[in-house]
Amino acid sequence: MNRYETVFIMTPVLSEEQAAETVAKFKSFLKGKGAKIKHEDNWGLRKLAYPIQKKTTGFYHLFEFEATGEVVGPFETEFRRDERILRFLTTKMDKFHIQYAESRRTKGKEKKEVAAEA
Image (cartoon, rainbow, N blue to C red; front, side, top):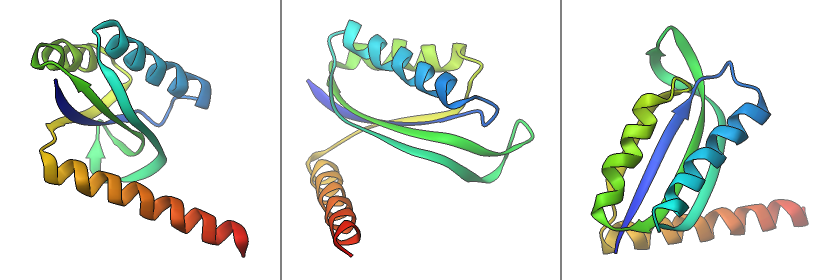
């Protein structure tokens, strides 16, 4: 089992419910193929670095999951078939990438706790 990270951008014309439905679709696809989702993060609506399909913003979402290599190809094919997806990127995580991702998550939690106390 390898560890992968996928970030994808959904079109900004979706409602919150449609965006959640799209995320649920891909999450269930991964679970159906036997993958274990380690972390999921919704980054929300963000400005794009350059226009894609004449759109300047998009809903960003991240999945971190463990799966065999055979899962990634069909997973990416599902992204290509879905018209709600503007872009996606899947990377295989090595031990340093995993370590960095975990430290990034703990820093985010600490910032939220400090903000909640203030």
